[in-house]
Structures are given as C-alpha cells and as structure tokens.
Amino acid sequence: MALLVFVLGLLIGSFLNVCIFRIPNRETIIYGTSRCPHCRNSLGALDLIPVISYLVLKGNCRFCQSPISWRYPLVELLTGLIFYLGYISIGELHLLIKYLVLFSLLIIISFIDIDRQLIPNQLVLAILVWGIGWQLLAPELSWQQSLLGAILGGGILLLIAVISKGGMGGGDIKLMFAAGLVLGGRFTVLALFIACVIGAFVGGFLLATGIKKRKEPIPFGPFLSLGIFVASLWGEQLIQLYLTGSGLR
Ligand SMILES: [Zn+2]
Image (tube, rainbow, N blue to C red; front, side):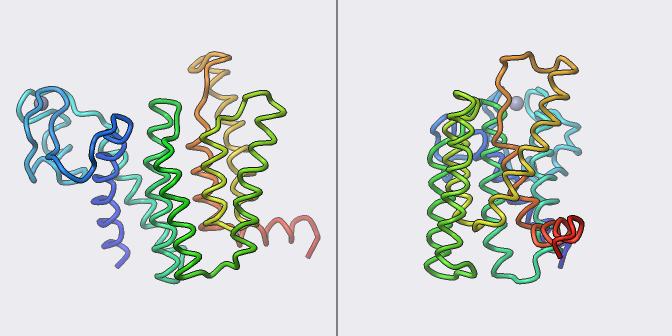
C-alpha cells in the first residue's frame, strides 16, 4: 500500500510540474497536451511516465534532443516521497487526504516562489477554500482552533513585515493565514518556528557561500511549506519532546 501511495505521488507530481510551469503564465492547467518547451512537439504518454521517461530518454527531448530540466523528475520524486511520508505518519485516511492536498498546493507554491519570488493569489485562495470546506464538511479541529491558526499565521508574519520594514512578502503573510486555518493554532506556531530556524540557517549558508548576494531576496515560501509539512506530520511528537525536554511535563 505504501508503494502504491508513493506511485500515486509520482503521478500527482507530474501534474504539479504542469501547474508550476503554467500557472504563472496564466495558462490553463486542465486542457492542452504537454509539449516540449523547446521544439513544441506534443509529448505522448510514453514521454510522460514520471521519472522513468526522464531516465529512458537520458534527460533529452525525443524530438529535438534538448535537455529536459532535472526539475521535472525532482518534483515527481519529491511528491512521491512526501506522499509516502504522509502515508506512514498519518494514521487516518481522512486526515491523510486533508494534508496531501495541502502539501500538493505547497509544492506548486514553493517552486513558483523559487522561480519568480511570488506566491500566486489563486493558489493561496485554493488553500483557503480547502481549509474552509474542510471545516464545514469534515472537521477534526474546532472553528476556534482553525481561526486562531489563521490569525496567528497571518498576524505573526504581518508583525515581522512591519518590524523589518518589508522583510516579509505579502504572499507569505496570505499563505500563512490560509494554511493556519488548515493547521490550527498549535501547529501554525510550530510551523512558523521551524520555517524561521531553517530559513535562517539556509539563508546564512547562501550568503556565506556567495550563492546569494546581500539584498538579493530569498523566497520564504519554501521554508514556510517545509515548516507546515514537518509540523503537520510530526508536530505532536515535537511539542511533546519540547515539553519533556524543558521540564514542563
Ligand atoms: Zn523538444
């Protein structure tokens, strides 16, 4: 079963690639065949098997031999791995569905943010609609917890934005507001904490190695997404570990 979930993740990852590529260009994600971005030849089913097509074609387009970005198999593998980890960490099927949809949207957001330093509103809206819909139809969180998550998620980042005079983008604030609704208060705060710690380390590393120049923006969406992912899967254990370690329990 775990293998099946991993393969499902690979297939969804293939669709997420399409979304990452087309949403910023305002192209439809539902119609239209996949084409090679270089020669515009339509790709057939055999060219679109996740990861395997890339390996069989040795990373080149079948028609024009242009190199295919390694990002495609990377996103597919990443999605497969995230689905697999979700499956083995979240016991209940209904919660698994809630989080796998959230994670899929976050993968699209993260890569668009890396490419363009922006988080499209329609994707934030999708998370918001998912969160509200979930609260209406299949809630395991109280509305108070859910709204607390949204207010804390958006509020803390808004505060950071005000204090740092623009060090935090509007997209990040909106994203954490929407994700907070899905996560609830406890996990939202934990997700923000994880995102800031990892963001500080990676940001420091990128500056120290000269990969990024000072003043060059480092997208925060991927760190928020990582924080949300870790908090969703292992939040309860991390909070217990902290309480035990700090002698509070
Ligand atoms: Zn081509």
